[in-house]
Image (spheres, one colour):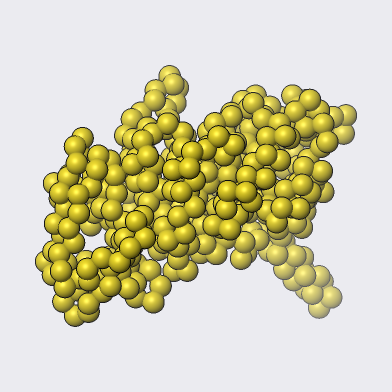
Length: 399
């Protein structure tokens, strides 16, 4: 009997260790990541400046929480004990002190590493050091880990991410675990028990609908990523999110394209991770990024990923069920000239095949609100009419 009890306790212990931290991402995580703008050209003053801007520009108040350093924060070699070392020139005060600064602003701090032997930029990866690295992150008070997939020869993706999940659990500090293997191994089928979010594509590019061919890999425009995966909506939900990559808002597209990009990431319930230089962001960019009405669609408690309803006259129409019977609808002009929208609610019975939720304007009259212009429109007894600019968006909420 004693041996059975010991075996049961060991089994229970192993299973407790093999759980991700629950409750850390009930809605899609919101924050900032250094890669899109700075690549490996990062330092501690940049992080402090970004943290300051979170507060100064109202980003913290809008819900943004995480500041994540991507590839390039560590020295090229581990120390004599095998520990990762923060690059002493870029981060002379060390990561624990930097995390403390971010925390002092009421924010959370994240780092990057990779499941392979080296990171994508050639710095030390975590392969063979998972538990040691997880203990180090815990000692530095890290809140978020983005875990990449370069230099992973012959590794099994699900197994590799399980190992780091278990290492983080063993270290004991709650950490949002971001799976970044680019969708190659279909993480939407296995990621829910391992991470809090998983990339569905390769890297994003600051363009509307392009592919940037880098030889052995490509980066993708906003609409290329939106159209890349099919039938993955059911994988997303509270504490487990399809991640459509860091945003390119403020990184060179038009203001209209930025609005559409932001609207669609909100409709898709993707994590809202900024990727621009907040120190030089324009007023228009900050206006888009801090739009609490649009953010509210992203952060809706149901956590349902939106879906494409139709494409009428090259105007993409998307819908997203929200809590309490509300809906969000987004109309994106894909044309190269302004487009006239005339949408008759009575002719469109919209049903979400995944959840069974329906928008039936014949049985209920909804109040309609324009989320970018912050104004009430005519209710669903009247046609929805608007002129939508090139690659611009009309995003409405129905209550």
